[in-house]
Amino acid sequence: MSELDEVMKKQGGVFDPETNQCLNFGNVDSEYDSNLNHVYDFTDHSHLELTGEDRTKFLNSFCSAKIIDLPPGEGTEAFVLNISGHILQHVFVFITDNSIQIETGPNAEKSLHDHFDHYLITEDVKIHRRSNEWGSLFLTGNEIVSFLKEQGVSESNWPVNSHSEINLNQTPCKIRWVNILAQPGFILCCPREKVASLWEFLVEAGVSPAGEESWQALRIESGFPVYGVDITEKNLAQEASRSEQTISFTKGCYLGQETVARIDSVGRVNKQLCKLEFQGEKESLPESGVSLLDPEKNEIGLLTSDAWSPGKNSIVALGFLKSDFTSPGTEILLPSGLSGKVI
Image (cartoon, rainbow, N blue to C red):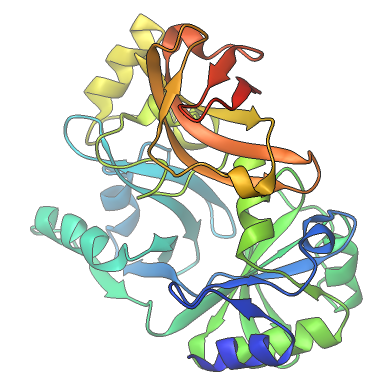
């Protein structure tokens, strides 16, 4: 158990004995409430940093979003694609004066490093693996901007994916505004050895600790996919329902662009990741990977993740549906008989 896990356990964190994830702090309804500020554990995130004179041009050749014109202090969400336009990773990119910092989901550092390194020939680029050095927390809630101002964070206008260097409780942090939930959210990235003490400071300052159960409900309701769970290398970029956030249709050549452009010209993909809602009890949560059915019980898709939503008092889910069944309100069935709809 990590130092942060020990801190969370002392604060009443309830852990899953199989996954060792902190599920909740005793009140999932409160942890779900957007009127309260919350902190989540993002220490399983992966981190890379690119340095060298050619870093921007190099990364721009692999990302679906436009990197080349971003000034220091700005960033973007993007997909890293393979040559056939399939998603290798879902990343957040942040430009600094001297480097490009990349944050992505769990267990991605090595594969992403090796992918970039494979194409590195004569460019002046160094790829640094930072996951053992950096750790992240996530702050969210409707009043989180006010909280940060109270802590001396002076920025008043936060464009999405903007970032800066701050100090919280004498801890140097990279603060990053990201579009993950349907409410304000910031990633705090700091030295890994400072994560536990930063968590303690935030909770003592009035931020409520929150666990995996409320996180899953919030991110599923917001349509935010997790790589390796909702989207994988089998998926094309436009199937993930994040095109507005991740894809530039005007930038120059990059790996996978031909497929992205061809799909854009056709105007549709064969399947799409959709937000779903099912009427049922918390105890009736389905297993991920079950089939999604139409009212005649024909298979039309696949459920990828689900959670109990305290706010909706129902089951929320993400899943891939054939393109003819993606309109909001479309009736969906589960093999168990639970009925639901696209939202």
